[in-house]
Amino acid sequence: MIRVAVDAMGGDRGAEEIVAGALAARSDDVAPLLVGPAGLETQGLELIEAPDVITMDEKPTEAVRAKPNSSLVAACRAVGEGRAQAVVSAGNTGAMLAACLLELRRIPGVRRPAIAVTIPARRGASVLLDSGANADARPEDLLQFAHMGAVFAREILDVRDPEIRLLSIGEEREKGNQLTLEAHDLLAASDLNFGGNTEGRDLLRGAADVVVTDGFTGNVVLKLLEGTITNLLDSFREEITATTRGKLGGLLIRPAARRLRNRLDPDTYGGAYLLGLRGLAVIAHGNSSSRAVANAIRLAARGVDHDVVGRLAQPVGDTVLESAPSTTPTPT
Image 1: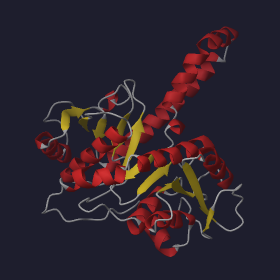
Image 2 (image 1 turned 180 degrees about the vertical axis):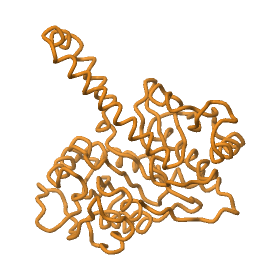
Image 3 (image 1 turned 60 degrees about the vertical axis):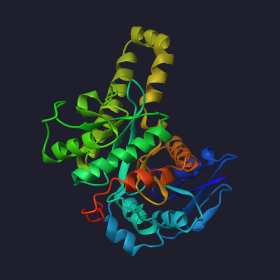
Image 4 (image 1 turned 30 degrees about the horizontal axis):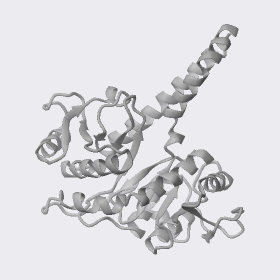
């Protein structure tokens, strides 16, 4: 039985949506533990009491320090203390990062954790990291992200020998800023299956199994992709329903349209791993539906089942440059 601590107060849609998602994810193999205030209606799920709440507009590090008994911090603490094997939160992303660093700590040798997001590419899912944990990064950080992404691709996406590419402004080796130029050299010299640079236009086509970038660029790319996908699907639906002929045609393509929406919908994946920690953490979207919450819990359970944390420790630790000091990212 895999026990997953779920921050019941973190989502934009209210605790009821989180509880509904946890109930949907409960199975013979997965036991969600809700973390929230006394009196929360859990519908039979176990409750870890946490009276305080960290809101989306609070400063992450300050909020984590000021509210050690918040649902978000207490959920992370449950993993650190061994009461749960993974944590899921749809709350303040920066606070989640700060709480995980405090309660779970980094894997030895990891300079900075990274957010790994699954991209629904045409040729199969790929992983983009870092997607927002580190606005600034060093070349050796991107090398570590690549190693972590390779483990993710093998254990979660079932890719035997994942191809790694570096996100840049051109495919040529000499294209990019100083960070990408130096990271390219490190990746090319590593034992990873490195395929060179890739451009943003190829991400949804399937640029590689793992695409590596810094957190600032990755977060901009992620939100651009999410907005583009959502608007295209919504516009497509509006065009189909605008005329009688369109509605009739819509009936014929409905099965294909549903498959496409399910493949592209972020709710299908539920959340993103925060890789590089001694415990497993999944960050869900703030506006997560109950379906997204359920899938985030299942994603967390799968990571536990595949021992993602244990498998990350050795390959990532081996990539650390001894001259590089271990630093803590500043959540924003």
